[in-house]
Amino acid sequence: MSNSRRKFIKKSILLSASIPIISSGLLSCNNNNDKPLSILILGGTSFLGPHQIKYALARGHKVSIFTRGKTKPNVNVAVFNKVEHLIGDREHNLSALENRKWDVVIDNSGRNVEWTKKTAQLLKDNCQLYVYTSSTGVYFPYKTADIKESQKVLHKMPDNIDDEFLKMEYGYGVMKANSEQETIKAFGKERSIIVRPTYMFGPGDKTDRFMHWPVRLAKGGEILVPGKTEDPVQYIDVRDVAEFMIRLAEQKAAGIYNAVGPSNKETMLNFVTKTQNIFDVESTLIQIDDYEFLKEHKVYYLVPWIPIDELSYGSARVSNNFSIKNGLTFRETKTSIKETHNWWYSDNLTDERRAKFEQKENSVLMKEKEIIAAWKKKTKI
Ligand SMILES: NC(=O)c1ccc[n+]([C@@H]2O[C@H](COP(=O)([O-])OP(=O)(O)OC[C@H]3O[C@@H](n4cnc5c(N)ncnc54)[C@H](OP(=O)(O)O)[C@@H]3O)[C@@H](O)[C@H]2O)c1
Image 1 (cartoon, protein in one colour):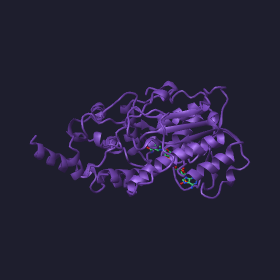
Image 2: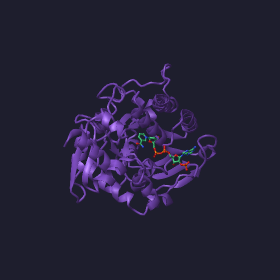
Image 3: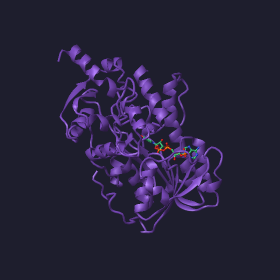
Image 4: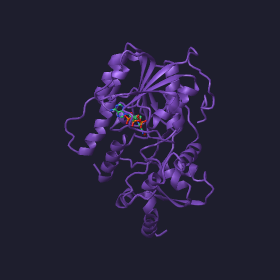
């Protein structure tokens, strides 16, 4: 396995991993029975949760969240005055969840099979529906294209994996797959909703994985576009995932769903070309399609782009057909990037936090001019 891939895997594990039919502006409760739901979110204060809460409240539902009280939200902060905040620890203290009833539980913070097993078992008689936030990581290694929800996933790590980072990648997928199973064991297929998002981006992102693009596109000039012309990308606005999940819960739409965008197939070059002009600046794209050159210059990935190899072949070729049929909708990428940019430069974040990312040593943002100059020299542009 390549060094770049290792670095990418390590990073993703450490950090983890439309025009709406019903736009977020439509605020009336619109579930199956038009009856407001009581929703418990395990987690809720990080990235996905604040958007689920905003949407759920706007549609008339009641929300409780369960956390240790450590993570502070940096988006939709005002909505937290309107939710019940239960304190505990998924590791050893679930007492705040005992003898309580909710219609729906959404498990965002399930990063450990035992955690999901315990909460699903504890809540199975007191909640109607368990919604587990999984990941397209369950499909690792991504060896095929058009990956549907029915694809077999690994529930056990292969025995012969020695590589530390490969173990982590397999480990994440297997953990998510087994957590899905614990959900289904406790709630049965008819009361379980499993949602598998691809890379999420948008306001509130704590991983900084996608922030390169909103920051970079706004500056203009010569923009490095990594990857071969045919390299596919997939990504999704976190709000599209959050809203889809709440609507699935309203419809009691048990099943497994790939939460993957954009709606149609896209390459990395398509992605940058379509977003290049959203800010009022002049820019030129400089595509660098030589993986070895990129690696030499420490461009190991630039999400949504990752280099395509045997193991990542299908990672951006996951099917979203079933989810679209069941109501997954997409904001326009241009709008998402603009709004993410606005959030990044808002008072929700400190200058220090922005500087930590924008002035990070050896980042593409910092070294782009140098890399482009080296590329021009090599290719004699
Ligand atoms: N980001 C992506 O691109 C991506 C892609 C695919 C899937 N996913 C999945 O999406 C899900 C949601 O991610 P997220 O970033 O919104 O949330 P997250 O990072 O998974 O969870 C953070 C939340 O969990 C709480 N928490 C952490 N440890 C806890 C503990 N021991 N006991 C109780 N609560 C605890 C945190 O609050 P406290 O710290 O206060 O406890 C916080 O509210 C994750 O399951 C992730 O695997 C993410």
